[in-house]
Length: 125
Image 1 (cartoon, one colour):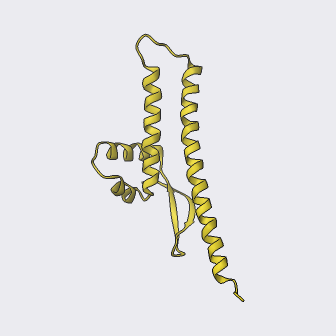
Image 2 (cartoon, one colour; image 1 turned 60 degrees about the horizontal axis):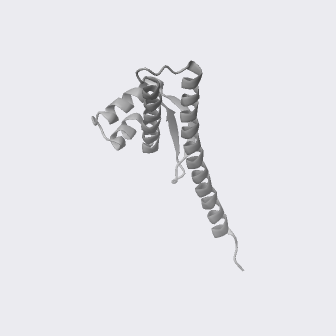
């Protein structure tokens, strides 16, 4: 499948798990399979070696891009290239904002686990 190793992530049991970065072609294939209900999101996650949240984000990104394309393709309405780019950038900005929110939550949970681990090891007197 030609996926690149993006980073190494620690799992809860301490083992390392490689995270995959899908190629654009793999993302499109994955999207088509899930959208056409050939396979479930969970099955697609296993097949492509990614987390279900990756599939959810891909579906949202595809929806946003399609809506921008549909908005620009209205009969009788010719959008300037600048307007199309602005709409695409707004969509990307919204998607990145959601990703940042998710990462902030994950970081907060991770830091909380670290702190609770430190408190559990500290001597009590």
